[in-house]
Amino acid sequence: MSQKVWVIVLVLAVIAAAVFGVLEYRKRGSAPKSDIAYVELEKLPERFPADFPIEEGTKIISNYNYEKDGVFQSTRQFESQKTLAENYKIYKEYLNSNGWTINSSMDLETSKFLLAVKDGSTVSVNISSNSSTKQNTVDISFVFK
Image 1 (tube, rainbow, N blue to C red):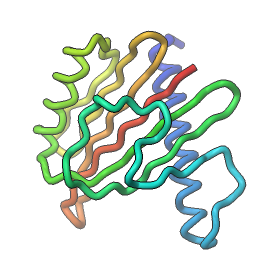
Image 2 (image 1 turned 120 degrees about the vertical axis):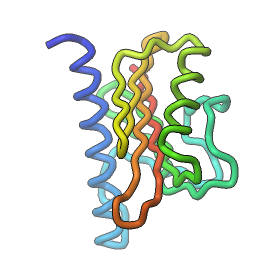
Image 3 (image 1 turned 90 degrees about the horizontal axis):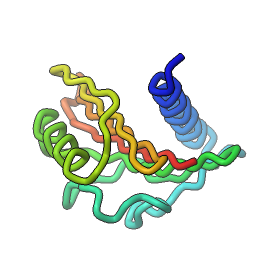
């Protein structure tokens, strides 16, 4: 498999592990034993770039760090008042203007995705809309090796 496919698989696996952890936490009422370190919602996760665009006044849904086997992930997920297209444009322009190389992208009506690399780091930006609530969500994860 190509390196791009491995990066996508790694990012999706880490996101799946994080989602499982959050669901277990909610189900049990306490944090399961894991390598996930939840971060106060008012703070950026460790290593999350301070200049990376985050919508002002938004509701943060999830905020955490994950570390295992020399790989570190920094994730923030939030609800957005902007459209999927507006968010996609913001992040695509930011990545292109700040030295990131976009390796993969998806621009569908109900879901958008960007995967980019820079200096050995990877960022994934998932932009989606809940079909029931119509709430738009942006999920940003940085992976550092």
